[in-house]
Length: 133
Image 1: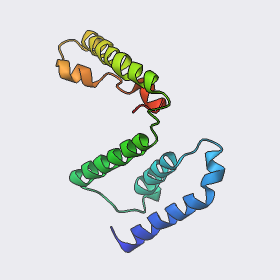
Image 2 (image 1 turned 90 degrees about the horizontal axis):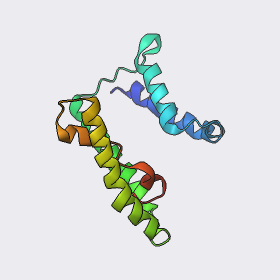
Image 3 (image 1 turned 45 degrees about the vertical axis):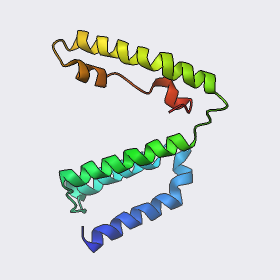
Image 4 (image 1 turned 90 degrees about the vertical axis):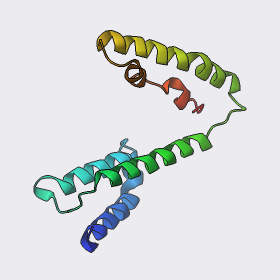
């Protein structure tokens, strides 16, 4: 990544900081804006960024992002306020969702591995929206 690439990324971050409040009124969030900016600036006629990350760098970035997102979600959990609801969602709802999702995946994609079928089921459900995960 060259100095000019870093300058473009810094300018994008600065631009987002200046217009983010206005854009969020229209449900344009930072991830949406930066994905669009990344696509526009790396592909097509406006492809001014010459950055091609390795597969290992993308994997590390995805893992770090996942850790930050999960830590952020876990820091907002108020277990004392809704402990009963969280226990029902995680103790009953989550196993049922995984089980029914696995059965549906096995029925739709016959012959696949049971672990792959279990991995395709939605695992967060309402528990994440309620602050339990």
